[in-house]
Amino acid sequence: MPTIHNHRGAFRPLLGGTAVVNPQVKHPGTLGFVAVDESDPTQRFIVSSYHVLVRLMGQPGVEGEPIFQPSSQGPSSEVAFVELSRADPGLDCAVARVADNIRTSRHILGLGLPGTPQLAQVGMRVVKSGLSTGVTEGVVTKVSDDLVRLEPPEGFPEDYELSDAADSGSLWLELETRAPVALHVRGNPDGSEWAEGIAIHQVLGALRLRM
Image 1 (tube, helix red, strand yellow):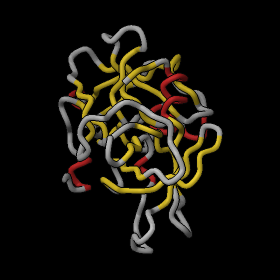
Image 2 (tube, rainbow, N blue to C red; image 1 turned 45 degrees about the vertical axis):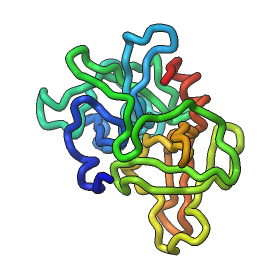
Image 3 (cartoon, rainbow, N blue to C red; image 1 turned 135 degrees about the vertical axis):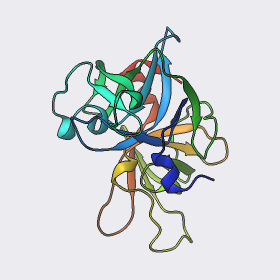
Image 4 (cartoon, rainbow, N blue to C red; image 1 turned 180 degrees about the horizontal axis):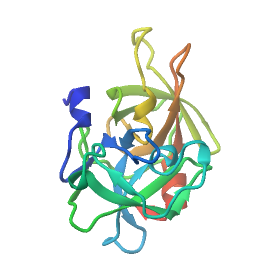
C-alpha cells in the first residue's frame, strides 16, 4: 500500500491517484484516471476536476495549457495539455490530452486496475486513491441527479479523514469489484466528514470518453 507521500511522486507511465497541477491555476489535485476517446482509443486523456485542470470557480480556461505531473518543475514534468472541448464546469470535470511521448497506464496507485463503471447505490462501500489523504474508504449515503454523497463507514473513528482539498479529481471505486462509480469533487472542510462525487457515467458522457 503506498504512503500518502508517494502519491506526490513522478510516475511514468502516468497512474491514477497521483499529483497533477496546472501552474496557472496553482491548485494541485489528483489525476483520477486515464481514458480514451469514446470512438478512437489512440486519443489518450487524463481526467480530473475542472477546478484542478482548467480554472477555479468554473471560470473560462485557456486551450492547450500544459498540465504537469507531479509539479511544474520543468519540461520533464509536462505531460498533457488542456482540451476545452472536453471540459464541463457544471459537472466540475475536465481532461488534458496526453503528450505523444508520455506513457500511460489504466492502473490507479494502491488500487490496481478499475473494473467496469457502474451506478452508485446507497449502502455501497467505496474506496479512492487521492493526493491528500491517500487510499480511504467510504460508503454511499445518497444518490441524487449527478451527485453521489459519501461518508465514513459505520464503526470508523470519529476523526477518520475521508478526503481533503487536493484529493479533487480522484476516482471512487466499489470496494470489492473496483468498479468506478464517481469522480471526487469536494469534501467538507469543517464539521462532520463527508464527500461528494459526480456519477461516473455523467462524467464519461460529458467528456466523450471510455475507460
